[in-house]
Figure 1 (cartoon, one colour):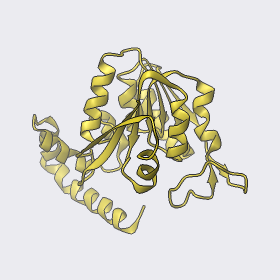
Figure 2 (tube, helix red, strand yellow; figure 1 turned 135 degrees about the vertical axis):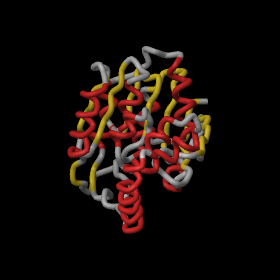
Figure 3 (cartoon, rainbow, N blue to C red; figure 1 turned 90 degrees about the vertical axis):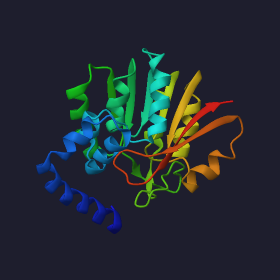
Figure 4 (cartoon, rainbow, N blue to C red; figure 1 turned 60 degrees about the horizontal axis):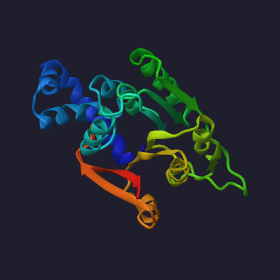
Length: 236
């Protein structure tokens, strides 16, 4: 976590200790105002368990609404997800089956606990840590601190599970490679949810790929004081 982000998180958590005693968080959470409920989430930065309790995924609100609508007509939907977390539980509540792959073994233990407490056995977590990269490595992550790792096994987990999938979420590591692999397993009318799609290393590639229809859904995002953009992508 960067110094600035770490300072922000520490500051929010310090303020929360005071606010908790006032009952304000409960009032915000129970409010009918979307703005008030969003303010409530700001006190839950990096708290996946609270996001699960509030039934939130860590995408923009417009994206959550569109995906919720998409899945409402597909109660038996099959989903594959790159990058597990609160969204895994959120999706499991709305789908017939979800397989999620996670590279971080420590974080995966927390996700397992959330799934065990909340779902009815329709979610499976695949824990696939990266290996040390070699000269032959072709699947890497552009994230700082991860560029010397090989994510080939992580990305290919979708091959082992096997599609077709009604929805694929790309919100983990090696996202461009994961997206390309996801297209091979996407149902004819399926959609890919690509979070943080406007990051330069993603957008420069995706915007130049032929045969795609991309919908950019920018808006407020749970726990964050600024908007983000989540993309929905269909084969054209």
